Structures are given as C-alpha cells and as structure tokens.
Length: 367
Ligand code: CP3
Image (tube, rainbow, N blue to C red; front, side):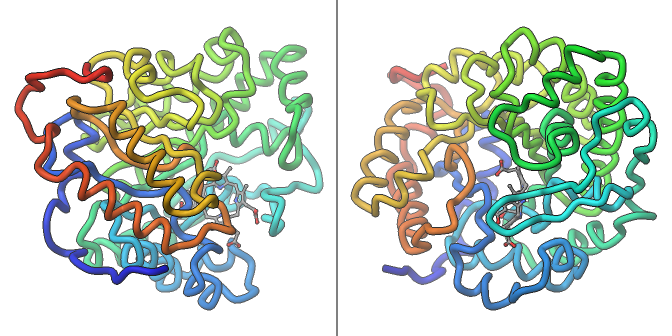
C-alpha cells in the first residue's frame, strides 16, 4: 500500500520542536531514524551505485535524499542525509562504508601512537559540503531539520574495532588497559563531534541528535566512567545554541537517567523499555523519543498499528513525546506501512489529551 504525501504543509508542523521541549502539541510529532535509505525506491534510483560518502559530498543530491522521506511519509522532521563517519573520513581516517556491513577501516586505531596521529575535524575546511547541504535545505523544508553526529564512544568503537563488532573486545580492552589513551581518543572525538554539530546548527539545523548506537554494550559503571564524560562535553558544548538535543542509544535501558543527565532535552529509547518506565528514568522535564520495534514494521500494518497504539497509550496524558522507531528503518521495510503509521499517530493524538495545558487525568505514563 502507499498513501499520498498529502497535507505535508498544513497543520501542526511546529510540533516536533515543541514536543522536544515538553510543550503541549496539536498532535504527536513523528519522524523515523534512517528514514532516508534503501527502503525507498526513489532513494535507490537516485543513489545508484556510487559510494554513500560520495553522495554525501554532493549538496544537491544530499538535500534531495533528505527531502524524499519528508514527501513520502509526511513526517514532522527531516534528518540530514549524511553519516556518522563523515567527520572521521573528512579529517583523514581511511574508512569505507561497505554495503550490508557498515563502516570498515583497513587499519584499526588501537595504540597510543595511532590515536596521536588522528586529526581534529575542522568542518569548514574539511567538509564544507555538509553546511552547504544544510543551507540549501532550509529554504526547501517546511519542517525542522535535525542535524546529527555519532557519539564519541560509538565513533571510537568503529575506529578501534576496525568495523562493526559483536563483542566490542578491542575497544573494551583499550578502555581497561590504557585509560589514558582512551580518554585522549574520547576527547579528540568529542571536540570533532561538537565542531560538526555546531557547524550544522550554524547552517540551519533546528535540532540535533547524538547517536550513541553502541553505548548499550557497556556496563553502567563503564558507561558512566568512560563514555558519558565525552558525550556530556558535546551536549554541554551545544547549550548556548538553544536547539533541542536528542541523546539516543540502543540497549540503553539501564543508562537512560545518565543519558538524560548528560544535557539532553530528549532521550531516545529503543523498543526494550516501555516509555512510561523510560519517562520515570529520565525524570521530569526531559522528553522521550521512540520506541516502536523496527522489526515489527516488517510484520505489516495491522501488527505495527497495534504496537503503535500500545506505545501511545503508555505516554497518554503526558507531553514530551516524539514518536519514532526504537532504532533505524530496516532496508526491507514497506514504505507504505511507515506512511500509514504517520497518519495513525497523527489521527490518534489529534487535539487529544496532549493539547491540554495540564493533564487532568494522568495516565500510567504521566510525568
Ligand atoms: O535517514 C537518515 O536517518 C539520515 C541519514 C543517516 C545515515 N546514517 C545514512 C546512511 C544517519 C542518521 C546515519 C547514522 C548512522 N550511520 C549510524 C547511527 C544510527 C544507527 O543506525 O545506529 C551508524 C551506526 C552509521 C554507520 C553506518 N552507515 C552503517 C551501520 C551503515 C549501514 C551499512 C549497510 O549497508 O547496511 C551505514 C551506511 C548508510 N548510512 C546507509 C544510509 C542510508 C545505507 C547504505 C547506502 O544507502 O548506501
């Protein structure tokens, strides 16, 4: 099934930024992590066989790939078409994005000498095309643009492992065997990530998301001691810009309070933790984003709609919810199901309890 990109420019387009700030909204805003990508036929046509890093270097193409899902799904926010490895590649790390696998390095960074060879990222010198894409988009978009970056731990895990990993043994070995080198690496990455996000906001991004996709592989103790300080440095360093900061990770149920405390207006929650529980963990004043299991979308609309209704019920009566998946859109996803879910979320929440100034009958998930 497919639905027309109707009413994209009509009601409720400011809802995303308001929801990030915990303010009442006309209807719950929706966007999808990895909404641009192989699940869209128009994406596959435009990208062709060129490397994704090449496509990102072409501002007109990158802008068009950012716009495609906004048109197709009627989502309430756009996310810049780029990748978390862009600052690493642009500052000199030889990384390939291998289709079906992810970022891969021929020579992983595992020693003090290798860390000391890394360069800081200087956006306007090394990757001016990113800001150019953002500037081009601001005049074409009628929804806010989300800029993003990988969090220092997640970026470091690619650098140190040399590619996607199941056990993260090399990065954990570095953390525990040579914490001095680890902190040097984490700080360098924090500065690069901060520079990248500030550049995107200066060019027109209205919100930012820090993707700590692999933070959930750490114990709470190790996260707090070894990963959180660098992420806090990034989020704190954006404070003066006044844009909402979304802090996202996968498998981070036991870290949600720490992630909120790092200086985020919104915490992204995967599908493992119910949103009412997540809210209790992030505390009053922090919004939540999520948390439909992306795999359930593959089960078809009836199943995904039932799960969507359950999630909406879990946050009933409380403001500060941005509907999203619990992780990125899977390539096999039927775009028609996602479009129908956007309509469903909008319809189910239109003018409802979320618009009330104060919830008179708090649901189970009320703040
Ligand atoms: O639509 C959007 O969300 C915006 C664009 C975006 C991409 N990557 C484009 C992309 C975003 C936000 C990312 C973030 C990203 N990249 C993350 C964090 C989010 C997450 O999923 O946890 C991570 C870990 C990466 C690293 C990365 N890049 C991986 C694991 C892959 C997949 C490789 C594959 O083929 O399975 C990529 C490539 C990539 N980045 C694709 C897209 C649309 C798919 C490949 C392509 O189209 O060529």
